[in-house]
Length: 171
Image (cartoon, rainbow, N blue to C red; front, side, top):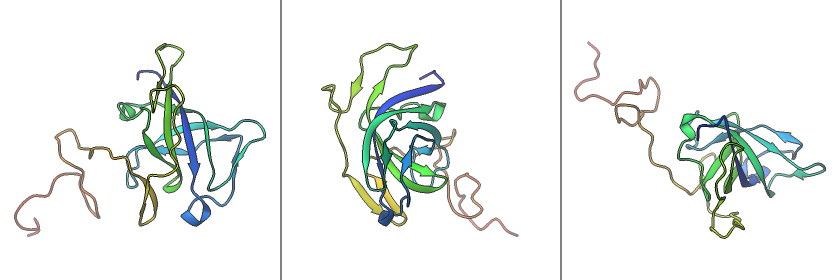
């Protein structure tokens, strides 16, 4: 994926207000963050969701439509039919997206790929597991590692380096 954007046809489901989602509907152009890596990850891309004229998407509802995502190297390998991701407003989870079809770009003509390989796509409205602060897609991605192959640490004061054995390091 070397283009500046990647286009997909996706099912977008807004979480209901009771699930911690938005309190109002969306219409027209909507530019949320798209998080392909999990609830604690801050590496996201911006996506362009263009609802058809006169269409509103209310909390708890879903719709199939094309989405354009800003492409960046972190998305490599993340865009494929059936892939679920978090739709967020800042850190707040407001929806779940599921890629139904990867659309060919202007510079890349290839057969379309669909989630069920039939050309019709599929709807996925279940498959979410509750987590402490909302819902998370059930699809899993491998843990991300830094360039040395270490998994990032979390918590206060984490340097991103693996812990060392021995004392606290304080003298």
